[in-house]
Length: 195
Image (cartoon, rainbow, N blue to C red; front, side, top):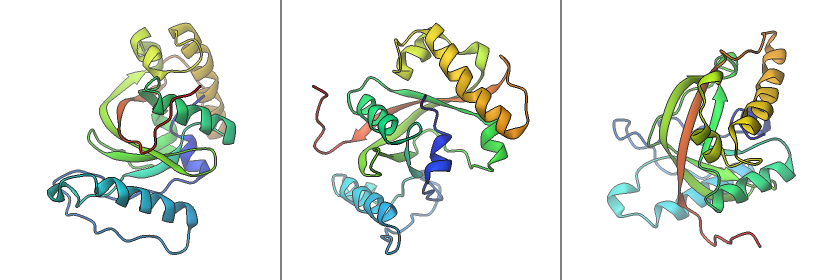
């Protein structure tokens, strides 16, 4: 399973302000202490250098791994790079429990592989609050996992969120509120398709 929430437990690097134009630009300051953050910052700088100079004064919202564990993070990152995975979701209860700030459409994020190396920058193109039971087949397909069917999505993602509910002492159910996201890859140097 891939929901974004795992990144908070696996080390996410939030950058206040995201890429929202109304927020004053945050100057690029590379991290000197955390090698993962330093690599993410350098990757972000390389991405900014591909943009026109007027678009370079912005920050990424966060750097994160999809999923849990090295193998899953590598698999999920490859699905993103291959254009198969273009959607994800978060359990809103878990976001609130962790006091996680919400990102916005247009915010950009750095995807890390299982070795905590940056592989691409994604941009959020759509965010929608939905109950678990209201997620449709199209969203499940773009989630890009398993056989890409709604039945697979409901079974596996429910299990993921049920685990988070138990962690919070809550009862999982079909009414669980999700933040459903669609995204696009905007930067992926050296993109290599899976063989």
